[in-house]
Amino acid sequence: MRTRDVVGAAGLAGVAALFAAAFARMPVAGAAGHVYRDLVLPMGFREVTPNLVSSVNFDLRALDTLGEETIVAAAVVGTLALLQPPEKEPDTDGTGYVLPAVKLAGFLLLPVSVLLGIDIVVHGHLTPGGGFQGGVVLATGWHLLYLSGSYRALARLRPIDWCEYAEATATGLYVVTGLLGLAVGGSFLANVLPLGEFGSLLSSGTVPVLSVLIGIEVAAGFVVLLSRFFVHGLEEDK
Image (cartoon, rainbow, N blue to C red; front, side, top):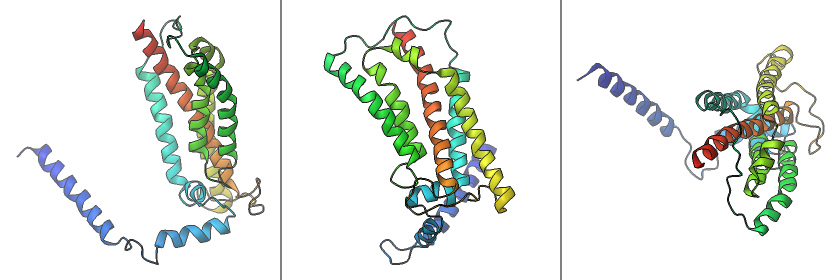
């Protein structure tokens, strides 16, 4: 047996042992007691965050969310490195014939989608939503211009350079917020800002701050990713 096979088998055995230990200690499905739930509920109320999902993402396990944000940033950097930009923008709209009803719907839904995305990001600590969901809605709404049959309009109106800066800045400010928690609260990403009143927009401390930063990073990153894919796709279709 080759050394690679031995190392692979040992690794698989280790992972299998960890999975077995984890599943063996899981609470019974439907049982009254649930350890993670018992931790999340009190913390959400203590940090006045009605949306417990955001309380988990941006407070209880904000460090894990930083890792997820870094994955998005790495995907953008990798795409930009692998898909080099062409010398000039494609001189085609690339969508062919688009029904007038589709064009009208796209143009009407674009501002609605942008406003909805902003609302989901800003109110993510109060209602279902948050930075990840709202960022995707923002990026998707922006690209309704393409679905409406006008790639040229999309290319003119999307601020690619600004999106690249915004993504990098939002990622850096997330780390800065974590360092602020370390300096003031004694732990990285500690919730140290004023908590405000339960249910109000200015509440939950650093939770809405991190949610907004994630929303900016995700929206800007997706715009940059799609821009590079669009350019290469249209070039291949010519």
